[in-house]
Length: 160
Image 1: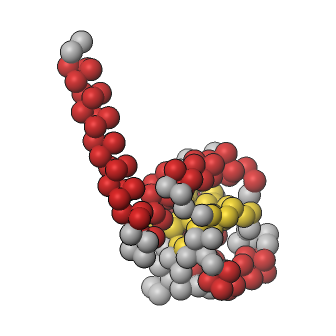
Image 2: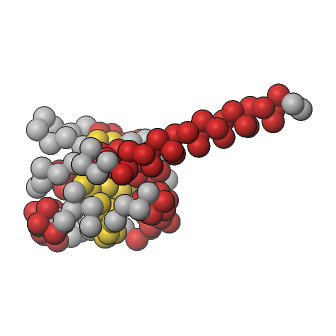
């Protein structure tokens, strides 16, 4: 396994499926777990400290509201942690974003935008490509396909 996707609650799973799909598209092995920084702190700690020996190479942590999951994982590991703040009803995700991005010195968390599920997966692939060169060509192809789609879409609009 390379990537551990960890979400704070089952309600996050519909969004997490977007991350899973991108990782599947790039043939990146992953596991998905529900762990809570607040409701299952011992289990979160145990998963984080044993992650490296269990084959985890990086984390994608998805959480809303107080959003301490990414920071909790980062406190217990030297593996990269990508935080995905989730949109909340209360503050539209600003609470999640600030909780995820405002980490103290020495406990870094790479943070993508609110509900940035696809970008979290792509950042994970980019990080893994440093160790696994096969991912580099897949990323190049992905970028070429994005470029070609934008050019095609532009031509369709111009022709109207």
